[in-house]
Amino acid sequence: MKEFEITCPLTREPRLKEIEAKAGGMKWVLKKRSIDARKEPVWRYQYEAYGPGEEPDVYVQAPYQDVHDAPAVIVVGAGPAGMFAALKLLTLGIKPIVLERGKDVHARKFDMARLSREGVVDPDSNYCYGEGGAGAFSDGKLYTRSSKRGDNREVLHQLVAFGASKDILIDAHPHIGSDKLPTVVENIRRCIIDHGGEYHFASKVTSICAAEQMLVKTADGREFKGAKVILATGHSARDVYEMLDRGGVPLEAKGFALGVRVEHPQEKINFHQYHGTWKPGIPAAEYSFVEQVDGRGVFSFCMCPGGILVPSSTEPGTVVLNGMSNSGRNGKFANAGVVVQIEPEDVPGDSPFRLMDFQQKVEREMFDYCERRRCSGEKDLPQNPMAAPAQRMEDFCLGKISKKMPPTSYFPGVISAPLHELLPPIVAQRLQKAFPRVKMKGYYTNAALLLGVESRTSSPIRVPRDPETLEALSMPGVYPCGEGAGYSGGIVSSAIDGIRCAVAASEGLNV
Image (cartoon, rainbow, N blue to C red):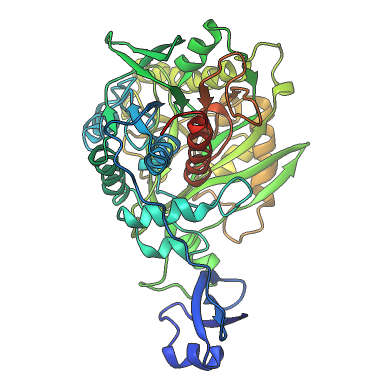
């Protein structure tokens, strides 16, 4: 086998003659595509060529089995971890019973629209809860390439089989797009049901009991039985942590990150990242950075080129933001979370809930500030309860109130606010030092708007599990899984953890 690379302008793909000349008559396979914008922006295509007797490593998906009459495992949560756990169970001959507190991926759109238009929060159906989880409406970034805990090809190839573009198999920064993900998610559900699995929406789990079988009860009084339970409830299911705590399951405070959502005009990001050479037809430019400030990481997170900002609160009286973009990434704005790492020692106390309480307090303070302003009688303020406190970037770093707000994609609207005072000092002071240090030209500018708060980066609690069996400590037969348990971050890593938990849960079952 030999490897070779071809570069070409962003306006075209490599020509077949170029590839064949480099391959030297050998069979070739495209392995990776990326944009190199360090100098003149170009596509970089990386290939592998195989000689006589050599064959490329081709991924083959295990077949899904008919599980109508098979032993059942209950999967709590229909986000990436839960969906891929259920798909894996099908390949192992086990029936998944999926319980989701929210609605199906299309029905939840109506609740999200109401949240944006009117500021009405449905605690069980929003940008975090519902089929597909938080990732279903957050661009669908698939940046995890690590194979330390599992083969990410099992995730990517299945996503393609269910409707994602084949480009995700080769792109260095693959994404599906919030416009296409719902169809992929719906196709996964149909596959699971067609093979004998079950889906139950509006099924908020309130208790898990171990008897001859696992007994799971939901808020509406229904009961479900299965041999094991995979708990994949996502990073925002605070009530699940409280349920586990009442049941005597040990919990640990876990570090997470908190900060702001930063929005620039996309044309400015394009101009600087492509050195003034961007033109229609070239992908919208991305960025990322990491800084160390006063002993803590400050970094960009969940960057959405050509995207929009959306309200991600899961309870009334809070303001939380996230970003999303469609597959074309052709919107006027670029947004990203810029967040500061918060560690357990940064928050006093010894309760496993202390970082979650810290997170919730900041979210409420953002809401309370805007509510006070709305009730003050000031003119021309947005009246949507999800309106976000905001400040221009340079003003934030200088500790100045922004007198006039620039345009924004955030539909509920923004209210000029002293984010440098509203954010906790351990966050605000590090952000004030970090923004001017960002090496990307044009990044530090008053044309950029900061909106508070970006707080749902990962779970602030970990549910400890046995490193070998993956079962929850003191609760055999329950497998804490994915972001909500503190073992992943993002769609692909969550899906991989779901697959691992499905394999672990299959141990000892007669199939």
